[in-house]
Length: 440
Image 1 (cartoon, rainbow, N blue to C red):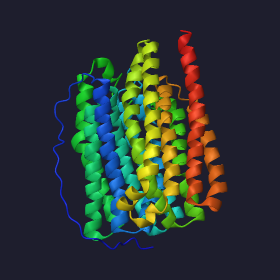
Image 2: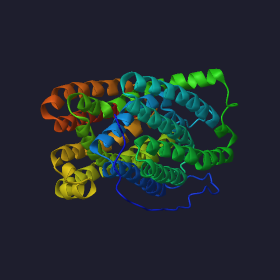
Image 3: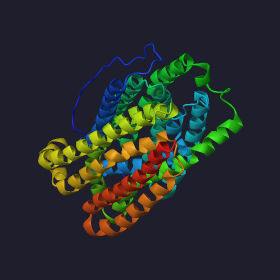
Image 4: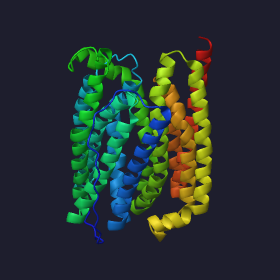
């Protein structure tokens, strides 16, 4: 099928000085880190959302649907190959492994992931769509290597440097995609622009900053040996496997509704659902700012034996995000329709029913993010796989029942159900962790 798009005329330019400067290793305060992480996540989310807007405005719902399908196919494979090393790296308070070891595993795994994505894409989809899927996979693989660099910055509680990385990545990816589409009218070239942006961010900012932080830390933080310790690399990958499987199921869980929409509805409907979901994902990305800030601090508090400080920080954060989520649901009910009309157009504004349910799902996801961070800081990785398996199964059953009958509203219901299952089960695990802490 053709992916050529009719183009609207537009122009614009932007410049930003995001070149890496000297990186002091001293951790920043929680408030400063939250502010920086919030800023980085907001701007990254804005750029990701703007990519969908560019596709919607310069193309058609079908174009947005193909891009969403590419993400749905590539993302679970990339996450599986990522081995969830970022979380394992940030909570590695004993510095059992070197930064070079984390990044070595990540590079090898990404090469395998790209081959797997290519095999899936060309076996299942037409050539044009398959190439888009592969190119999106390459862009995501480069971002996954940058993710390890950001993990080094996060572990050192230098989220200001991490936020600059996120901003640079988002701005360049948006610019690359827009330039590619404007120049050629082809989605393929737009995604190639994203690949160039990811490579530039990795080489010019992320690697230099990460190595600067690593070199400035104590000898223990530099790891135990050189980059090539086969047994250590194998053991690291094996240790991270339970969390890897859990995060892979998380990605599948997020994309299950899209698979069912593609099966039972039309690609245009998938495009509408993807566009509405990106508005909601922006809120979830903001919440990840708080989780990213809290994870290294919660890990440090536990390592120091300060369990009262751990509980105090966690309870205040949970209260804040719960209230914030409720406020966003109210705001969506009041202002959602005119906002959707301005951003996407009249065709999308008519689906306020779907948007409200998606917003409710976002509100449920807010405490899920923080409870997950608390469990990870306690390194309770093995229990997360069965939790996500139950959530995924409930989502798949709900999608199979509700999407054929209720359409996109049924898809939104399935998301709310899956997130509710996650919240209940992860909260039970957190209660066990807190009770174990009290007995120490």
